[in-house]
Image (cartoon, rainbow, N blue to C red; front, side, top):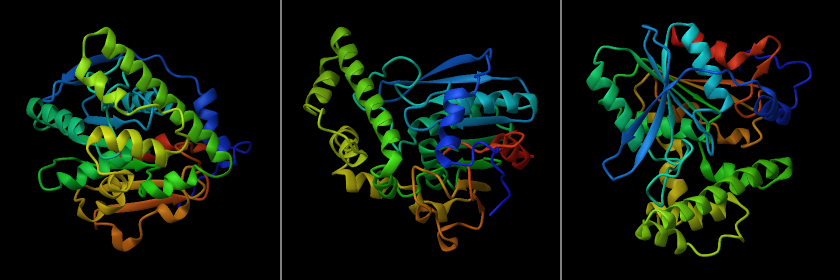
Length: 317
């Protein structure tokens, strides 16, 4: 366990999780957006920032997040000051407009990350590339590092507050105050799905509209187990929620990762219990697990500011 001291008034895990989301002032960054058209007729957007020559850092947001999430903007600003160029990925349907398919992204959807990496490598074959994934984005990143272990040229990767066991996390947010997070996230995903259906109807995309209509009335859905079964699994070709969780939980991919990787996790994360964490035998020799007693979920607000940014940047050197 490493030394992280939370700000004196933010020792509670829920305060650590909520405070930066509500109160952190987002920096205004002059970013450049690039659209990537995908082989399946869809797209995703990437927001670039900085012109530093130390390398490129790919940033992956969490569930219902985007490139403008507070932690992404904070890292883009901090990394630019250290001489890095950053590529903040918006997963499909997360850049401010609906994507063109009924499905979008999920905990194991690695295709777009691979497309971005390939494009960067083709243009800049000798530039150092690192990756940082937060929460669900970290799960996607770790699965990708495993799938492409023999072909990647990644300097360093960092995964923060990752739901290594998806079923465990779905159970955890069904209890206590964490149900507030569950409701917020599921309401956001339902709203996005309704907006996408309206977009498909207005833009003559009847086949994709029909896929969403076929899901039926989703008003009864309150848990991640239900949403991931009736929506995510259905739209992305999994047999059911169990099949989806089993095939995409990053806990099963860690042993095959060859990239130098650090996992950062708070033991009081309100999205999961400590038993979600991998044991030593589940880690490859290239992975280091760093845990803190406090920090909440992608929080880590310390006595002197945002500890997470300082910790990760020092690791990148």
